[in-house]
Length: 179
Image 1 (tube, rainbow, N blue to C red):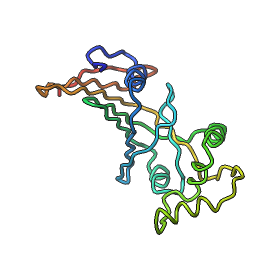
Image 2: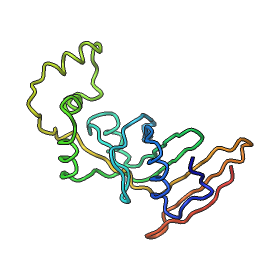
Image 3: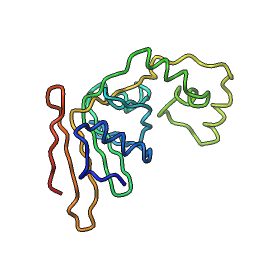
């Protein structure tokens, strides 16, 4: 287990160290207020990317209030990110779409719409041709551009180890927080 007491001055490197140990689900919170698990598809020094329908509740919430928080939970550790949300480029959307297998592409067409049953969902997916569908205009990627990170490691005596990174110009101000 990576301990935050030895954390780096670069929050992306700290996140990468934990992520490389184990890739865990990401919880996305928007101003709905709403929270849900989504797949972290990609991250780099620009931010954390996921894809969804811009017509879904998530897409509508992000259009209205383009800020979000992300949370990852490991055994005894937590990473949080808060920041502005921007849409990724059309080129990034096309590359992502092309990299999805057929069922994942087809499932995107009706995301968050009601369906009678699991059987009905599978029937709808099977009814679509095997041709690779074009990316629908509403299927877009979003990047959460962090202005704040927090890393937290549990302590048996509740003297948890916490560090906050706040964007400061082109760098990050790192602060140890009380439990």
